[in-house]
Length: 267
Image (cartoon, rainbow, N blue to C red; front, side):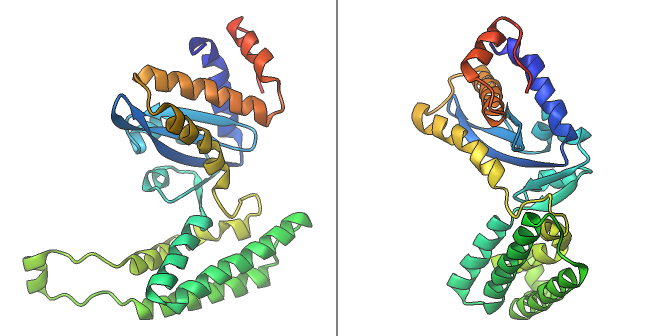
């Protein structure tokens, strides 16, 4: 079955390369006691899983989608994605978890204000999407001004540590706080974070990818591991095809039978 689905897997990859918006994510899998990775590229119509021993750029290149892709990929800020020439959108659910954690642990008001602002923008985006329109430019401008104002409060609450040259020599460069790291990310990747508001094709979160990876997590919880790398490869290919069939409301059993006969239906 693995070899018989090679053609349909290549078809899925080609379709993903044509999509305006795709989702990317990855999760750890146990392969004969080794922690390896199941990578994912998906949309509402297509699912492509790919097993590789590494999590980063090398694996993503070997998948064969991102090097050719020029649309928008939604992801959770794993930096390997940022090496590709396509446009990027960051998952705001992950950002809000970090903001909520900072507010609960450190009582920094800017974090709550930023979380509330992102939800407010999301409500406007959802409303505009339902009405098949877009958020007007003046409203976008107001949101961006609020965003910048909250960032300024955050940086005031989290100034960089004052370190003398002697301290650097003795202790090395001091690590930043999680709050400061998040503020830097919010400032540097403002366009990618707010892309869901400026381009309504882009969702607020990376939930599509998280849903598609759930089956991999279930498999790991039930089976525990793959005995050999090829077993992981086989599972990823077959499961990606089944997921794509389901998304396109195509019959699974008869399609798999057709694949055995070397004529798998193409979604």
